[in-house]
Image 1 (spheres, each protein chain N blue to C red):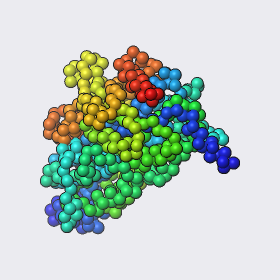
Image 2 (tube, rainbow over the protein chains, first blue to last red):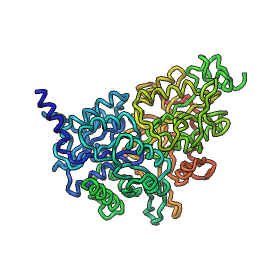
Image 3 (spheres, rainbow over the protein chains, first blue to last red):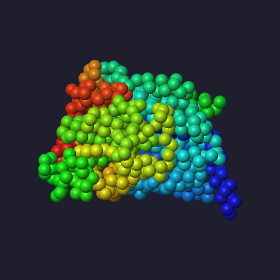
Image 4 (cartoon, helix red, strand yellow):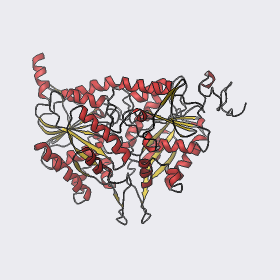
Length: 271
Length: 288
């Protein structure tokens, strides 16, 4: 029985082709937004995707994908992920599903967070996935170390780093780059989020969170610049409502930006 | 004795005394410090810096403690990058922006901007304890603590280590979006659990006025009523709303004081109103 369980545990990531971490130094730069949009873009490209949300204190993924609070079931192989769509193209696991009250605070110190993340990584029956995206909280601490330690048996393709154009944000992403170097995680590229706002009334573009920081950072550190995503109230509203932005607004420049980033990412994963 | 506030406890040593904040008489003094916490799902980390700067117009001295151990932004925002912390017989000296605005952050202890602090909880807690125990803050009217997002080690430690001295309360920061409010409600629950009064909520990034056509856009739409509705539901004071202003980001990046550079910006005015209302009503923190 024990042997079978071990075999099954090994199998939970066995059919996951690629694992990508989404990191940022700073909070509020849009990691969960980018994770969600990348997942949706990959699905529209015909891929099977999973999202592992290890932001235990601030799990945003369930709302962004409008999956509500379904029960999480167990099977022989472990926990069954929650599917965002009837075709089961998008599988999700988040602590958000395990909280009875969504306003309940998860006030845990490092060791407890580490233990749950260990379970999330090993005990979720992901099945066959092309890409597993791991949405992390900001920083370089327990959650990040826990994810990497538990993924050691399985390959991690690399990390996508999210920043805003501001130096205050890129400053923290430099630290994330150091983290990746120290933990031997390949940097798949940098995404600059909140990159300019085009006024819907007069089309003037305002660089609300400064300009160019993401691209400069990529040059400075020799990383790939995956692209920039503009500030878009329609994107923000879609995420609030758990709507598929890419399906709803395929003509927007934001759609183009996200699709290009997803395609570049896919090419580097399949290379 | 001069400068004993009217709401101070008996035997208050006076806010400018050497014993201010340290004597046992200071337990629970509402003028000792304010703990500013925030669910910073908001990429503008300048709020605590600006609150500190504005407070200085009203009180004698302010200290700003940055306990975002993995992502210390305060040195950059305050124009203090590259500054170092010195040790003396009385402890670590904080870095002074002005004579009466002291700052401490792990950022000052890192030798390079690429240095990552890859620490688990216990080590972060140890650093925070040192900040509180070993820094020679001197006489301070307000201690503002900038925390990272979440409800974890840093937050628990700050509450634990400051429990003897007393925390006046927490200021909660959010954007208008539900994804931010969702996290901020957890912060509010945290405060309730550890019995920190909530001074109020600030809604940041609340609308953007186009510099060309002057129309307002809600870039982060308040789909569930924003901070206002949440405050109504939870019976908390809404201290104010700060609009988006590209000049804030620029000032943060350049380490300049936005409030000095662009004092007539609606955002600067918003800060002024928030600080003035907050500092005049410390006893009105909500304890539910």
